[in-house]
Length: 256
Image (cartoon, rainbow, N blue to C red; front, side, top):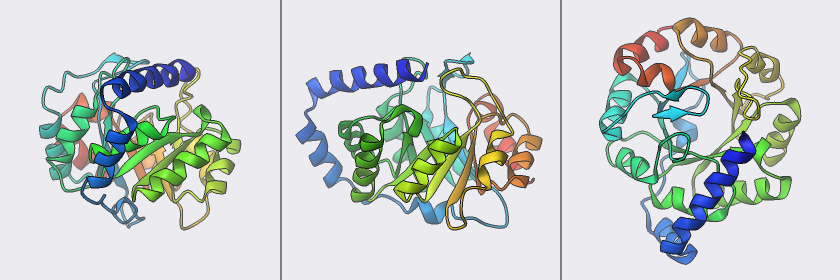
């Protein structure tokens, strides 16, 4: 599944590049307003922090919500206490777009993450041109050289990389990069099976000074509490927010 998602995202990016060249998108990225400081926004605190996600659909769950106005949803997230907004920009399975990201960036004052299956510099420049402050890198989907090159480019553009892992070996790669924001995804992106205890297994190997993000398998406050007890500084939440009242649900999650 991950290989298919990566291949599809790459194919779509190549189609966009036919309409807007690498040099054009790079120029737009360099001309964009400076990115926000995501590391400060997500820094460990007395209470858990939440990255709230704009997510219409997923391969595992199908259609979740129509979200006709992603900007308004993001405004609700910010009002509800989210520390950052994640925007799915993958179009085939998640029904997102860069236009969603641009709308969200224009509506909120907190950091915005481009969540997609990024494997080329073109996609990184797209993220920055659209206003992203963070970009997702999935270790399982990238070879070591590409991972390092994309991580370096993200840093050079002033953004923050959320480096996503699912195994101890991937976590080692993330740490070797010097990643300051590391996610542990409870969902195996190859099989889409969930292991909510995976975060706790790997979190102890993440040194202090690195922000720990728990991803997936969050439907209730008890799930947030589970991750917090295992050492999560931040929890990324999508489905539970787009299928319920976002402000009320955020309040319940932040109260753990």
